[in-house]
Image (cartoon, rainbow, N blue to C red; front, top):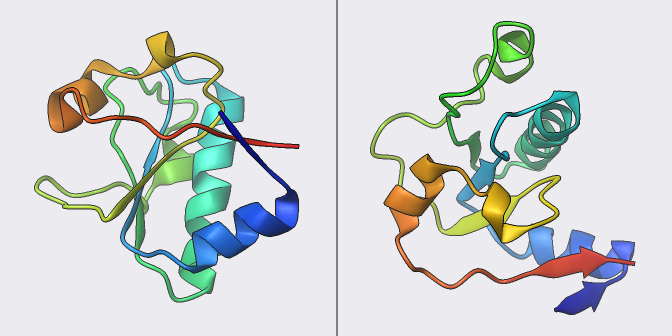
Length: 109
C-alpha cells in the first residue's frame, strides 16, 4: 500500500477529474460525511465529482448527499473510496460496476 502525505494526496486529487466517491456498506456518518465533504471540495475546485448511490443509505444521512449522487450511467475517470478500512466493506453496487477491477490503496500518513 502506498502512503501519501496530506500534500501528496491533495496533489494526486487535483491532477485528476471525473470522480466517483464510494461509501462503505451500512453507511454511517463518518463515510457519508467524508464522501459529501470530498465531493463538495472537489467541485469547489471545478472538478466533476459524484457520490455512488448506496442502497443501504438511511433517511438520517440522505440529506448530506442530496445533489451529489451519481446518475445512472455516470462513467468516472477516478474512483475514490472514503472511510473504508477493508476491501470487504466495498458495496455490492461498486463490485457490480467495476467487477474485478484492481483497487489502488493509498493511505494518508
